[in-house]
Image (tube, rainbow, N blue to C red; front, side, top):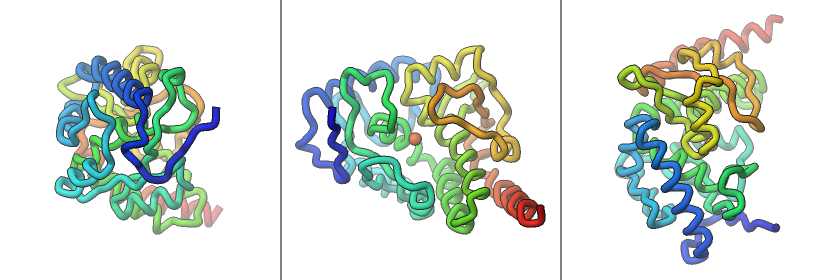
Length: 249
Ligand SMILES: [Fe+2]
C-alpha cells in the first residue's frame, strides 16, 4: 500500500487508526519500560509530556524542548543523508518523521516512523548530558565531512549509544537507546541472556561494524550519562588517530 510521508506535521490529518496505533504501541512499550528503561528516560517521557491519549504535536514538543535544552524536532519525510543528519545535530535539531505505521505493522516496520523517532528519541532530548554528547557528535562529524572512514566510525558510535545503548543503574541493566526503547522484540532481546553486553568503550565501538537489518547481537553499557558526555575528548582523539593512520597506510 502506498504510504504518505508528509514533510510537515498537519495534526488534523491524523486518523483514528493512527491514534489507535500510537495508543497501542505506547501502552505496550511503557508496561515493559516501567521496569527496564533508564530512570532518566522514564522521567523524560513525563517532562516532554507524552501520553497514550494523544499523538505528540511537534509544535508542543518543540516548545518544551526549547525551554529545557534548546533542541527541536526537524520534520523529515524519511531518513536523511548521514552528513545532513549530523549537521542538523550540531545545530541541536533532530530529524524526525511525523507519520505512523499501520496497525498490521505494529511489531515490525522497515523504516523508522514517528513511534521510533519521537517516542524513542525525543524524551532524552530533555537530558543535558545526553544532549551535550549528541550535539558534539554532530559538531565532530561536521569537521570530518567528506572523509568516509571518519563518518563510518561516528555512525558506529551513534549506533551503539543513541540507537542501541544500555546503562547500568543500581547494578541493574536498563535500556535507553531508541532502537530498543521503541521495539518490543529488541527490548526482550537486549534484556535477555542471548545477547552480549560490553562495557562502554569508544575505541571498541568505533571499530565494531553493525547491521541495520537484524536484531542486534551486541550492546554497550554505560555507567552514567555523564560518562557519555565525558567521552567526547576521547572520541576526537581516537578519530584523529584513525584518520591519520589511514593517511599514512
Ligand atoms: Fe533512530
